[in-house]
Image 1: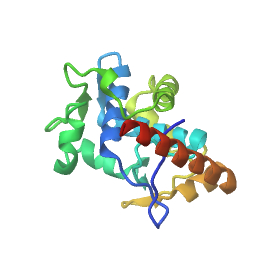
Image 2: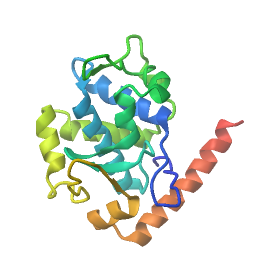
Image 3: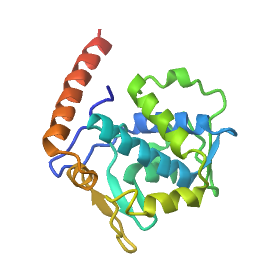
Image 4: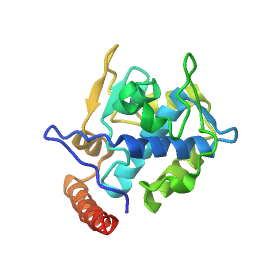
Length: 200
């Protein structure tokens, strides 16, 4: 069972930078050369959250989903990959945040066994997304997510960006709201049990 996505009063997720950094690290580790262009990594991370929501009613990173000019993405994750100092320490434990380059590589000496914030279900979702989309070139993946037949939740924001709420994502994907609420309630219960054991 994937972990719970905390939601604020506007129906948007709450970002977990440490988990997001671990997702980035696992995805980059799956690349043959242990390196991914920023835009491809961003799209893959969005698809991980999207697939986790479809399967479990909760995203992995808890980030805010957004419609961007080049398709859907994750608001704070993009900021982190661009070098936002507020997130740099956590992300730099897993991937290299380059200066003047968009290529993110796995930090040398990184042990994926240390991705302790990711559940087995999270890892399975990440691996399945990589199997389906990892072979795509950067702009091929951008075009795929930009196509409303593939990602109907994306709405062209022009030169700006628009939030994709979890309710909006459910509606676009045809997920029954009652079923989505039930899955999220199950995740809250499982997360509570996990945290109780973690504190022992």
